[in-house]
Amino acid sequence: MDILITGAFGFVGSNLSKILRRSLNYHLIAVDIFKPDHHQYHEYYSWNNLNKIKWDKIDLIIHLAGIAHDTKNTINEKKYYDINVGLTKKVFDHYICSNADKFIFFSSVKAVADSVNEKVLTEEDVPVPQTPYGRSKLEAEKYILGHYHNNTKIIYILRPCMIHGPENKGNLNLLYQFVKKGIPWPLGAFENQRSFTSIDNLTFVIQRILEKEIKPGVYNMADDEPLSTNKLIELMSKSIGKKQKYGICHLRYAKSLCHNW
Image (cartoon, rainbow, N blue to C red):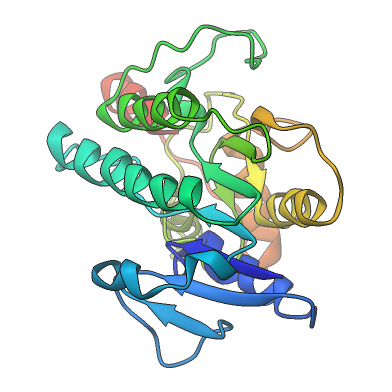
């Protein structure tokens, strides 16, 4: 099976390729803006060379590429749409004209809501994204669903919440560095709850989609149990043999940090 993965060398793509490479049944094709010296893919194409790909030979497409949620608010909304929507259009249009029968699009829970208070977010909830990132992901979803008219093709839209695992360079890595340096966590008095998605669970779902006849559709993704930031710090501290520390911070600063977590 020939599998094309966009955003191939990002956090998810790198972990996924390691798992899939173990099977001799998969020929992995990478699409990304760069190629590292060491990777798990059999072929590589840059975004400028999409037309050189043998699309008639592709069996399945996993579209990971995009700009992630920017907690520092340094990316303007147009750039989110240019990349998260624009690249999705390019790849999906190729998919429609190709012989591939499955298309997996990685959206985000942010396409539905920015935060959830005391309720479980389901696929039936009406999307009301509050950020440029979330709105761009929802727009990409709409393009896919609006241009899908072929009953012989199967589409999966996955909406994971924050993904954690080895080599994650996002907020969780920042939190890990916080703990590793022994800096007291200033929000120990706040017992927030947040859902996460482990990279292991994510790759397990992808493998099942590849191997089984899974019903197509839109799926929210999260681990079974939510965790508090305090619990995460406790687990991180234990993993590196450090004693967890808590400090005190101003309420306004606490609210700002809680918003990002």
